[in-house]
Image 1 (cartoon, one colour):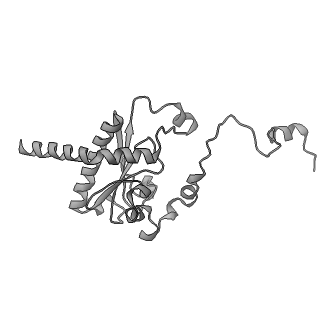
Image 2 (tube, helix red, strand yellow; image 1 turned 120 degrees about the vertical axis):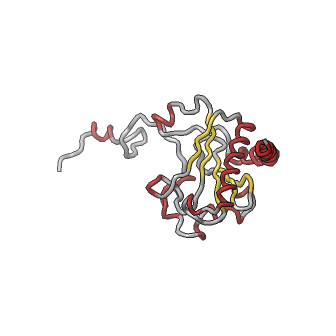
Image 3 (cartoon, one colour; image 1 turned 180 degrees about the vertical axis):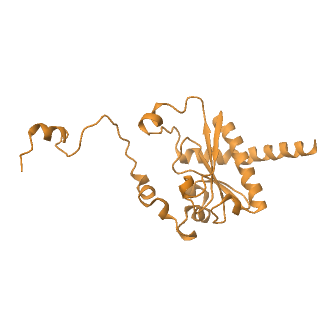
Length: 202
């Protein structure tokens, strides 16, 4: 076997003589995502292993819950696309939007609407991405338990980092955003319902 040249060694090691091919990429190390990434869809097999079933069993701050309704609740996304990224979840462990009852569907929608209003107030969100990824092939991170994303958007928030470097710069901590949103929720919910009631009378 031919000896490896010193030039080849130089190309495949760094200044500390560690193996690897140098490239132009900067890396943001996120070891907290390892459990999510390594297990993927297989991490949720039933209600006992479902984080959306476990969250309501703990206190709101520990679970990052913003508000609790009768059939559904709102929680911060642990891996947000933007600060204030919310998830609306039914308490019941159901996978599909068509599995919701009429009552659940109504509250699911209302909490989504109020969530948008709260984010407009506390962070001046200029737009939103709302969506439910249904099933594994539909891109759902946790397909076994239905959840809707509410992602606040601002002009210029889609800069070059997500496009070129697959990196998202999030400017607010999840805990701080949860506190701000939770504190504003009740007042915004009341205003929203009063507006709905007034429109119903017209």
